[in-house]
Image 1 (cartoon, rainbow, N blue to C red):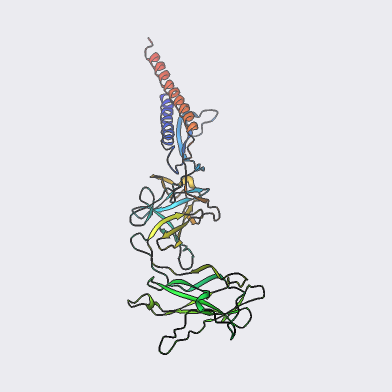
Image 2 (image 1 turned 120 degrees about the vertical axis):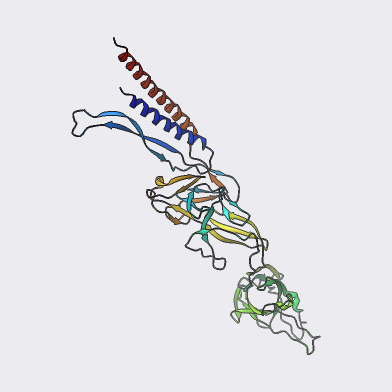
Length: 414
């Protein structure tokens, strides 16, 4: 027996205890992945030796393998926490511009509006065009307008859900004319500067069955000469009181922003009027919903990440819209990733290049918003492993002690 066997065993056991200690220390680290020491024997041999002439000379740590098993998902309720359930890593951009990857989804919004990790790395994602809702194919750092309001959007269409009383009859020489405001409503639309401009809609029953005229103005008999408002068109219902058609097919109203915006307002523009949800039933005139697609400028008030990775931003003007989608990355061999601290890994030759995708697509895992992935360390198993490693260390120390006693016996022979 040589001292080398015991020494190699002590070194291997010491490294094993280092790995176990590291796992135990990170039992509560979000997104942490445990490792294990893997051993291999050492053999001394000479070329051509056979017949059992190869001698073992100890042990070595062949590898410290990372274990990328799924950790438990714990609900936190924080709107910027997000956990990956399945394959994938969040891609982040470090301060030096290099890419790193993490499973820790405890993100923050810093003072400049960047979505960042606790280490200050920027979270990468696919930007979404607010106008079309289409996301880009190239990942970029996610940032949101905390220092300035979002630009106003000019109204392009109005949509009304209302009921016109089927019992109303048209004005005749016998039946007095119903005042136009009787069946009227109003909604604010927005110009390019975000200034609200009121738009009125009035409905007047015609002599034609199931047909109403649509106005956007009242007559002004006191003007010189008197002004008689022209109808914007008509709306017709079928015999069951359901919407049938409008004439013209697309109803519009012209909005003059100078009414509410006297300081060099933008030019007048046409807004379409959608009445497809209007009805004509035998009940009182009622407006159930009146909406338009414009909005004023607004400041960012909150950010939420949904289960599909969409980052939803809410603004003080009442607008909530998708601004981006969190990107996920996957690797051919995740165990080849290099741990660099701060819950981050970087790619290596062994891991292969990162493949980016969206949560839930292909072999990418799904996300759980308002939750975090716990460390996958099994604390009970690690404590058992620690006791086993301790026994191995003591046993290797005993082999050195025994070899020392043997050597002392030999030296003291007379």
